Length: 218
Ligand SMILES: Nc1nc2c(ncn2[C@@H]2O[C@H](COP(=O)(O)OP(=O)(O)O)[C@@H](O)[C@H]2O)c(=O)[nH]1
Ligand SMILES: [Mg+2]
Image 1 (cartoon, rainbow, N blue to C red):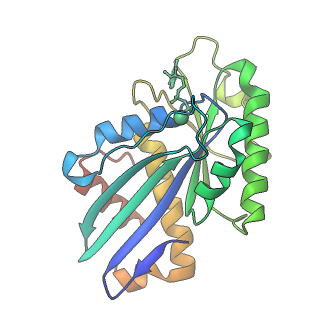
Image 2: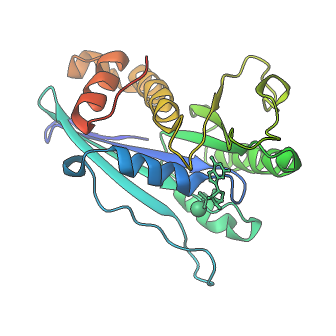
Image 3: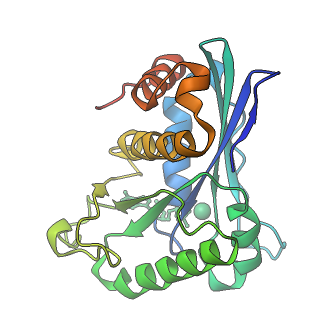
């Protein structure tokens, strides 16, 4: 759950990029990092999963001020390999929203599915089954990328699929803003953020886009 401190006028959101190994989660963070103004971001911390430490994740902190409030958004990735289950649970704890990065390679259909089930199971185990989730199909540049109208929608035929090519950065910002909007709406229901801060999800997304120097696609 978001940390909101009305006395200090500070709101912290935690967003997590989840998905099978090598689907492009770290590439999404690299692209976001490249697009956010240097003044509004912290160091991008990436940890390689090749050696055998216990905890692995990437973290990109983004911050800005609007309506007299300071906003901090901590964006994490989890490692996709089955062996890193403990890390995934730690990173998911307290999350406010998830981007599920699916791989568009046709041979990754089962890996996407397995990771989706792992996500749903882990969210249920920590009581976050209603968390906003945005699905991105990455690697749209691959010549054999699965067509989006034939792609797995993970049990919801109406689910919106965001196409992206994280390697070039295409689609990364729209996916991020899609999640930001949904996360704000979900938190607003519980915390009455719009009333208390005087900004709604569109205004929040606009403020974020202006302050971090990216162009928001509405
Ligand atoms: N063709 C293509 N390759 C990508 C794209 N995004 C990431 N990759 C490649 O996929 C591999 C895994 O990417 P990475 O971001 O480390 O995946 P992660 O394991 O989910 O963090 C790397 O070799 C990337 O260069 C993309 O949009 N298109
Ligand atoms: Mg990674």
